[in-house]
Image (tube, rainbow, N blue to C red):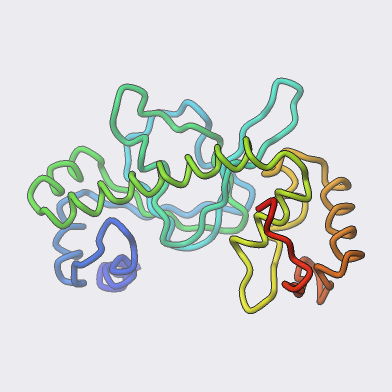
Length: 225
């Protein structure tokens, strides 16, 4: 990938917001960047690996997962092209990867040295503010997820909240799959499928195709959302 194409791509990434492609090219030359390819279902990092690089997804999708003591896997979150991985763990006393990171498809990552990046953001206020905003947004998102798990006890309530936050054009697509969403909700796939079927019986949802449903908002109660 040419540095010009990479720089243009990074204009839409949070860490480089407000910089033009030429400025980003100059930044890349100062941080010793590398591009690495990973295959589908490859474990990129294990929980506990020391985080030495700034990592940005160029192509593909990944998710973080953790294993319970009984061997069950919990999907923490899914990340796509343009996202910065584990930005809140780059610095601090425990700068280690918090989860196992697994690719969901063939993926391409941009990596660069975090110490050189630290020098870079100290020299440009825009880059510094971008990094602060990045970790602040991630912290706020984590807070929302914790609140979600504490306040939405039933499976139906979790589904309704998911619909409320992710619906587009009166449609909802359960991503990346019903199975993955069940892991995120910490429930079984059959239980989640059963509750989705119940919402169809209540005429809140109507199935269009695999994982995609139309929403009848006139029957959609937000009292538990």
